[in-house]
Amino acid sequence: MSKLANILKMLILLQSRGKMKVRELAEELEVNERMIRKYRDDLEQAGIYLTSAFGINGGYSLEDDCFAFHLKLNKEEHAALLMAREQLIKDNSFMFMKEYDEALDKINAALKVNVNDITKAESDYMIKDSKPNINIEKEKKKYIDINAAIVSRRKIYIEYFSLESGLKERIVCPYAKFMYKGFWYFVGYCQLRKEIREFKLSRIKKYEILPENFEPPDNFSLKDFMKNNIGIFNDEELKIKLKIRYPMSVIISERIWVENQRIKFNEDDKSILFEATMRGLPEIVSWILGMGSSVTIIEPPSLKNRVKDELGKMKEFI
Image (cartoon, rainbow, N blue to C red; front, side):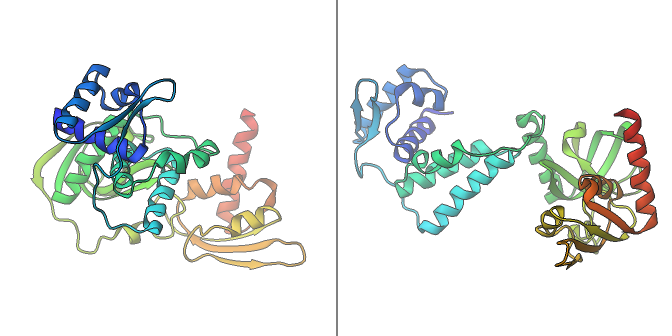
């Protein structure tokens, strides 16, 4: 990062976070403490003065109104950005958290808000989910490159590891991307399999954006492609009818699993009758097994048999 960029970032940090120790600034800017003092001297030559405090609670801070940004943002909009940050931390899979925080620092500087005071209490009690076991920087570059290929309609060469067929070379026309359970996927036409498929970015071992362009089909829609899916498996649709007993009935009824679902409540025993047309048999089976003894499969018989088979396999290994 250039000297000017570091000085500007130092100003942004001080205005958004308030007093900071020289050591903290050096860590943020990835320079030594001597350079932080040099930046302070450069700022003072430009008429921007920092207040220095010594001791345990010492550090640098900006004098009031010596440096300001102008940004039209109301309190509700700012609060929404902070809440979004908390959700991103909880999800534990957002690849651009560093860039988000840097942008938020600039916004907080404009509004003269100390983000640490606002988010500390909430962050201390945040319950985090598991996160993808990936190299964030590598995945970030992969995401950026593949997104660029989607926008520019360029074909991609990939060496892709599939759970079914292992490592294969493929040429793919990427149409769109989506996130599922913390992982990024893209949907595209696979020239090897001659059909539209989903590809998990973390399973792409090597890739190259090719110079060859493609034209996506006019009738392709990611929303339609994923319609009625409970997961990412695009197999045949199943008309499902389940009886779900209390308390699982309450938990299931609190979420929209697919848009066409219908739920009927039984006030006598607090159970529900859940009906829906769904796709993604492996995910459906896993979903039903997660309900344990609280669920009875009414329809279809093929689903009941599949769950029984899975339970039989589980008994062998438990």
